[in-house]
Image (cartoon, rainbow, N blue to C red; front, side, top):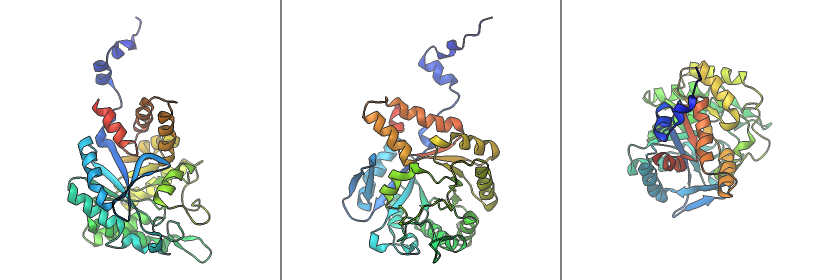
Length: 323
């Protein structure tokens, strides 16, 4: 007998009925860049349709996200340059840019799930993700203390979840212990478990003003050639108490997403990073690709095994999914 798979493609309703992988707006986390100042909603040149917001401009953005059904944001704060120092102290300032942004978002919408990026690169004068030794090497164990302080400060301000992105060894355990000590046992950690030293971060570094002043981050971020290492990093984070694992970037690392998903039973996030966004957005804006390429590309991340997707396309996708 001739098999006829086309029977299940006959119309939209049937295709929806048998679709194996479904992308939902609830799966999406939208990144927000918050800057000092007032009256600022400024498009980021390397990230079309993505903006820097001053805190007084966050309300209208949060309301728009709420109307679109987007329930989760991840925050990145950009302090004044003169506030940056060798130990990133503005990162754990209880009245810092992120801490004030969290409070403002919760004031506008108490149900918005606010996740904060926990790292030091946006707050250090040298742009690296930790404390430097005299030779310019990032001191892993000394950095842990500062990361824990940043995480606790974010949660005290009202963050629902913290997401350490620094790639220091042992940071999940350090943050977990610090949160628990302060009575925040209920706060989840979404770890950037598998974060590669990728060139696809270029537009983000402009947006967050976080490029290293010298050298690169290859001594702490992962070699793009390695996948076995992704399993090691993920396993360590599981043992240290991570609640959600993450792979970053996403589109160039779909194989890694699949491997991590097959090996661990924790929820898995993937970060559809700035370079991936900028390339595809440019192709759509210039008529090289149809807008459906956005949906198709993010669907591939979900199909590879990601349960959660951090993406600058969240608003575009929310509108597509409503159609």
